[in-house]
Image (cartoon, rainbow, N blue to C red; front, side, top):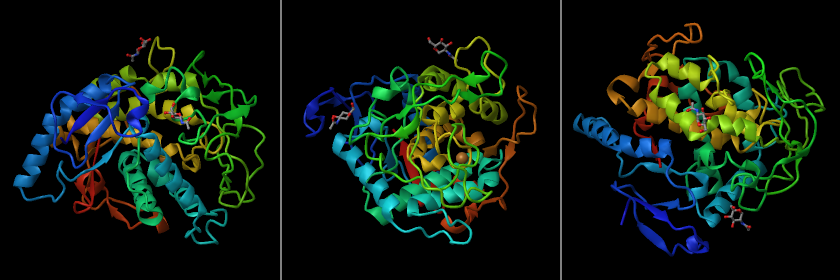
Length: 410
Ligand SMILES: *[C@@H]1O[C@H](CO)[C@@H](O)[C@H](O)[C@H]1NC(C)=O
Ligand SMILES: *[C@@H]1O[C@H](CO)[C@@H](O)[C@H](O)[C@H]1NC(C)=O
Ligand SMILES: [Cu+2]
């Protein structure tokens, strides 16, 4: 049986036994998708399922026009971390450690601090930060960025799966003890040691002018990344007492530990109801973009950070809390994976009009405006890491790049 199945929460998850019956309607994906029965579908998961018929219709239209070799049946499946079995999580961790052990390809004069293939991606995020984060490119360039990272894990490190994402809602109640951050061998590493850095400034009026610090902020001492060497940066860090980088651009070598402040007050701003509202209450692409970034501040909300910041500062620390170097924490890719999923679900509410839309960002926060269509000649250039490609191709995760980009989230 292909499709989505849920699994009763059981240790036999490990052995693949004890599959519960399939959930509701099924689609023919290339693999059986097993879900962790610990986590009932949240409102966004349900929205995603409810959107599947629109996605099917969209794909049928493309197929009829002979436009794509990508289909729902052959699409790669990106899954939520807790839905992976423990051995699958360990395989992923192994692949990341492998990337960290391979020599860098970044030109030595441009990024002497890139000590590994893993660091190559961090260096790219730093050197191309302007383009990666302007309103035109933010969504598409990050989609490409995660995709080439996933490709490197698979092609250079033998990883057989796809990039997992982090559904914050599953972890908001207790992120430190979650499958993401509990510090065991199949997690993405533990929290940092206690330190006092004063929280993370936010561009909101008091009392929302900072995300209060949580209990960490120091070196991570548990889990697979406890011996990780962070080299690039800092460049715009939120934590204190980090030795400065020898180069002003942050691209020099500055070996130090991975620091984190796994922060519940931040994750709380990324619960499913916030995400649902982000997707469904913002049909205009500019409004969607602004809300994604947390602007204007939500009134009468205890956690108004916006999904993007809430996810980043769930990890926080160094380099996770550094605007330029944040992909230097391997959990970054889970966070931006979730953001990419949210954009995809937003696009698929009305594929005919939304796939090619980009925010213009020139409207003042709080105003809407309809954005504009991507122009054919617009591209994304990630420097030495990957070929320059049309932005338009990246707007289509189910068939972009001549069908090479072809994945769904479940
Ligand atoms: C690590 O934590 C996860 C999530 O709680 C759990 O499923 C797994 O069994 C744990 N692994 C070990 C070796 O304790
Ligand atoms: C989300 O749910 C929480 C807890 O019920 C509530 O306090 C908050 O106002 C909700 N936020 C949104 C945007 O729906
Ligand atoms: Cu970024």
